[in-house]
Length: 474
Image 1 (cartoon, rainbow, N blue to C red):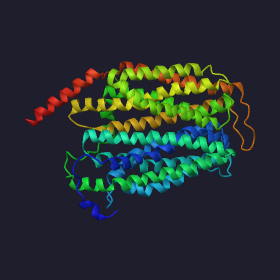
Image 2: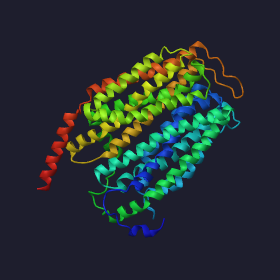
Image 3: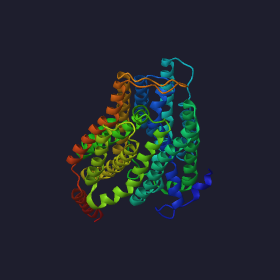
Image 4: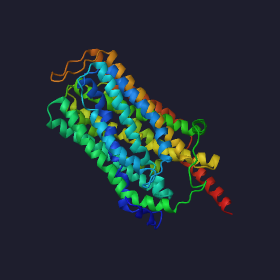
């Protein structure tokens, strides 16, 4: 990076394909690490590190709560960073290496006692989440610094989510291959951690390299004035803004119900495949890949259906399919492997709406807020969506760990055969993978029914916004 970049002038608010590609690549690393942690960290704690399920759930809860608290701190500091490279790039460049190293350390098993391991993994979890936030939050904040065009920002984020979901699928493909090639259980996770570390860090620096000229050019022309800078609201003001918007409360509820179902299934899936279905551990990533791959393909299908029938209709259809899979899953028996994969496909159709619908509802909520207040306050609403997602996930993972612990789940000892679980543990696994997510999905359907912003209501909101803009221009 050199100071010559400041002399480049952007021809328009439109971005080149390579700039969009470089920006999208930046979300691959965070997506890979996040997906690996959801699917593999809890089984790693119980089956490799030898930590009880209850204690393992507590580790995940503490680290996730700390992660939720990192966001406002890192956001505050990055907004106020002064550096020749700009506000965001120092965080991504200098945070990328610690981000990778600490992620890799999560798959190391030091020779400590169980409580010593608890302290070690809590410390590593907290440090990793700090590093994760330090690179992912400034990365996300690059969007308004690349372009001010509304439609171009939407297009830019489509590249981001394509890389995000693609990274999640890639992590499962890697896990499937590594688990089939490496026989030692502990070495499998360590090799997966090392490979994912390398693949996760490189795209972050590619993002910096591919977008820095554009950001430098845009920032040189941007005039600092009250209308062009985002005012910082105090926490009480943010709470008031967010929770006075009734449709936003429904969106939060829909998102938490849907995403909690996704995360609980992901965290307990290994136990279901190995301990209840009696399959080899290397089969588990294949099942997870079936769900994620189907979800990726169905994103495009549900988008087309939403254009015709609306977001609520899509949520009903996808969640109904998902619920059918959950009901059958409750009665699935060992040996019914083909049916298990079929249910994974059906569930993937529903998982796609968990990605698509809540985040597509959020801009409608923001439009309503603009109509009421004459201000665009995306930051407040997006920040609370992420914050509540992390808190909800922390509670969900804690409850799963406690349920396994209370049911008498027997942890696998490295180098020994997989133990036969008691009936109480198998019942807890079955209820966790089928019933708990189903309850969450039913809650999401109820909230979606009462969500007030339909296609017609949103069209009226946009009409009123245009009329007000025309009046302001006179």
